[in-house]
Amino acid sequence: MKMIEAGRYKQIYGEDFDRKDAEENLWTVRVNTLKISVEEMKKIFAKKGWNFEQIPFVEEGFWINTTSSITKTVEHTLGYFFSQNASSMIPPLLLDPQPHEIILDLAASPGSKTTQIAAKMQNSGCLVANDIRHVRLKALRGNLQRCGVINTIVTKSFGEYFWNFGAKFSKILLDVPCSATGTFNPRIWQETNIFGIKTLSGIQKKLLESAEKMLERDGLIVYSTCSLEPEENEENVDFAVRKLGLSAEKVKLKNVETVAGVSEWNGRTFDEQVADAVRVVPSERMEGFFACVLRK
Image 1 (tube, rainbow, N blue to C red):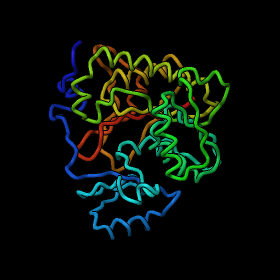
Image 2: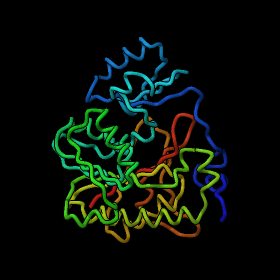
Image 3: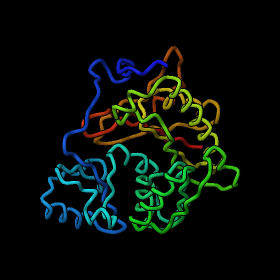
Image 4: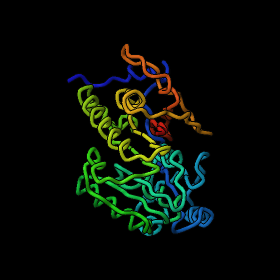
């Protein structure tokens, strides 16, 4: 099986593209406002002597430079913050969850985005968090409990068939299982190949079909991956527009380095709406991420 090579990404991000290793001793966290305010948490950071910098596009997000293992602290155990890459905080921001809404997180584990959505909902309304594997559900339930989330129903079902339950939602987060090449994990880069990418792309399309069936009229899906692969990203948005009849909305992000979705790949031209999606440019502080807002 042919492994992926960094050269394919130069077509997307330019000739200067190279693998980005994470900044040394850098942690990225999101303050859990269900349990503590941002200002109170900043005082705790300072008291611990942690060097912290606010992420410019999310009020609750911080980069922390410390040699301490922050996930072994009392504050982490109490659910005061969640260790979460800055790019991962973008999809819930695009979903714009509001109190009292009914929202679905179709592939929720381990719950970083689920807990972020619940916090934006102020623990009101109803958030359905679904996954399929037992070990993933265990992590999801543990994080929901740790973070004090009480508005969430956890379900165990194949997302491709979730629509059979007949439920309808005005907003759906579809952060799909993906190759995760945007994380720049050396093991993932060694093991990922084109066959695996195409297999995942097929699964992702089935999840999109299921989500579309559950979406209320004028509702929206936020589709996202931590993958760099057009087969998992733009190709699937093209599928959602051409085959499912969804419309892609222009994604507008401030204070984030992004590029538009690619308009063609391997000789295939995508629908012009695909360019409204965004790719977060990978860096030492940000994983490579893809996000698109789809409306019915």
